[in-house]
Length: 184
Image (cartoon, rainbow, N blue to C red; front, side):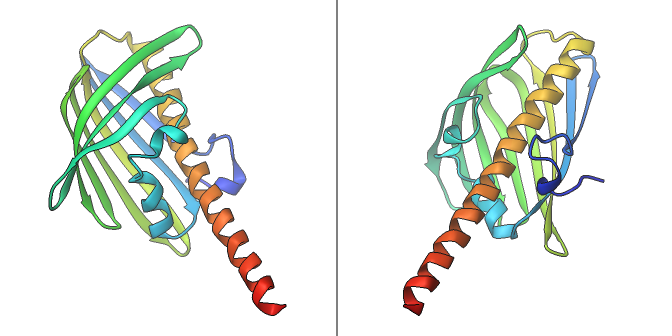
């Protein structure tokens, strides 16, 4: 079971399993963070600000909004050692606040990209469980591909988790400063 982020700021505690069957890639991810569901949700759905805290994103923005869904565009480059994979996608995102995020590829450099993220409260720790099913447009060798994908997914989610912690710390610090001002 994954420990809290305080145990591993590097993300080594984030469980990632990558399975490849032919061209299909399935990624399962699982970790916890000491925060509220709202705090975690706010980071995972900060599509306009995501490129500021996820290092492999060059651009992330909301393209359109309707009643229950967003269309987002993201581009960047995944890098692991000498391997570089530029990516671009336009995805439909459906939100079930504050429990589930569903993504569906509209266009990009994948044939298929479907993702589901669940947030559950476990006595003050929020567990994030994520699954992606993808079919890339380029061939990815199984052995190298698994290591590359595992590294990239772990890094992305660790950066998001670190942003949750950063925002929570900033809010607590701001709250403490406000209390000191009102005590004077």
